[in-house]
Image 1 (cartoon, rainbow, N blue to C red):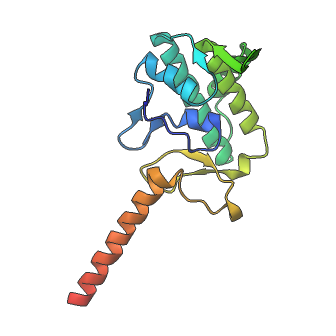
Image 2 (cartoon, rainbow, N blue to C red; image 1 turned 90 degrees about the vertical axis):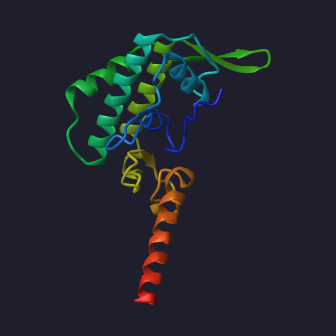
Length: 187
């Protein structure tokens, strides 16, 4: 079940916010159907299984995602929080979260979509009130709108991920330099 979800942001709340890709250009929606949302919950590692969601769960997930993105952006840019976004995240965080259970073979977390969304909201609360705030950056690929936690040495990371943006951007820059050098040599 590969739905091309990416987990490159260094934090579950940021990976969740990144499920609407290229916000400023082509806007690629990762939660196009309930099964895509369910797959994200499992692939992210938040839960081991989730009760199949419905269209209402998808709409709640999109609303929470946009609220998290708004709050993260405001925090990163040192702006005031939008009250509606703040209220939506806090309301979701107040609901019962996904709860791990000990089994004979280890740990297992089963959840409903509402419980999984509460867990995501709680991660957002922790991120936005914690020590990683100064490490949040937006990918330098102008088409990408992912925000990630930069834990690299010297905090000099530029891309959300090398595979998704860094290699593509570096290859384009190389081709441009090569074309410029060829034009200079022939001119």
